[in-house]
Length: 132
Length: 151
Image (cartoon, rainbow over all chains, first blue to last red; front, side, top):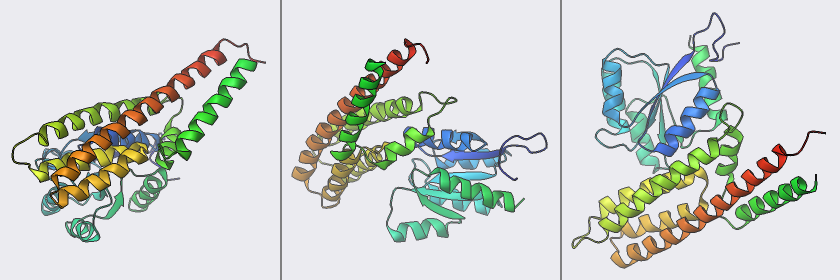
């Protein structure tokens, strides 16, 4: 069974939450922790990029679309340009279809309305498990 | 015992009324489902974050709408954030006013924006009161359960 719980032979999945909304940060953190992820939170795209640059590893990034300093699309582009292959899932508040497409075009693997539900995170976990 | 059953009934009725009157929507239920022994105060914690964040944003909106020359993009940015966090906890009525508010920002309608600010403050204080009442009821129920010997 490939879920992110820490069975003796299975290390936990690590997720990065990039979002400037404290309410969303908490909801996603608890949701991801419940489903077996270790989590880290950053408040803008630049912090996300800096983390990866410093050699941090994550299995999943939840990338908010709108953040100060550096937004989701820009951070995603930079991460992909750096060669980061991690699953990056965009998180938006019902943006226009054109904005979502532009965000996907920046290099996302998927995009969902926030806040994410347990079902969506579980399906992401399954995808992560398959890719191992 | 009786008081527990009574309180339980009160809590159910009160919660149902909040949903029926549109103060809360299914997203609030989703939050309740995330609460468990490892996160026993999850809902209260998230809602408290919402209160803090909203109060900050409402103050920012006051400042932004008090300027001689309005920066509608700045106003819209704050409303967008408020819309986001209110929808995350299921505060439907606050969220709805934010949608209208954003339309006025886009249309650069000052009067509309000022009206919406009043309205969103009003809806926010209503939902805050309702949620605080809800939490007090929950605490009463917990206390009543705690003092009753298990059957």
